[in-house]
Length: 333
Image (cartoon, rainbow, N blue to C red; front, side, top):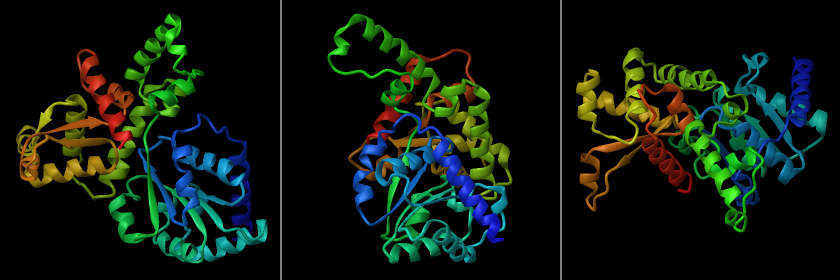
């Protein structure tokens, strides 16, 4: 239905331009070199960490909102198929004239979307893509868009972004003032426990973080990988949440949680990592073999989710601090 498609395009664009841009993400400056390259830019990361907002910021800063924007997270597009992309392109041209920049949000909802994206890229178009991490993993993108894309992994707010969110801009000289140092410490204490999920920081509702966590377990992992023993997956995830920064081995997980085999423990851990919910770290050794064999540590992507979900009797600030330091180091590659 061409009229419906036009309606969706115009409606989405109007809503997009009305929405607040929010805190300027640190990636917005770093992504300039990606903007200047001919490659497809793929923005992935944890659910609700701000991928769509970053996309809007890129559109405004580098393209003055001049380009084709389309979000596939719309119930009216449930029947949209790869064969409909030509129809979409035709409608774009009819509405806005010819442009060579595309911004696609949640494109993974369309099977075989990469065929159209590759074709447009080969024609010289610049394309930005966001999507749920479960379908836009680097392993899968590597086979779908070989040699054509640049990855951007978006984390929840860093402490600098958290300060901006709270209206604070700190420079070196300001830190000489006792009052500012005291305010910084107070804000850092909040960041340590609240984490950096933008929507949670705005409304302070822990149920939001719990719903994100549940969506990752059930929609991104259990449904995607057709896991029937969801209880085991849930218990493994809760184990990592409640034992952040402690040593684990796949063999120990198998016995402690009754996972059946070491392969199951490893596969489930990989699924949790692929969803960007956890990261595991090898113990250092000059021997790669020993790195693989030795016990590992697991860390959570966001302290707010850790606080909302983990089973604990008291707050262990040292454990939260270690987790925060790990995520910051990961953010800095």
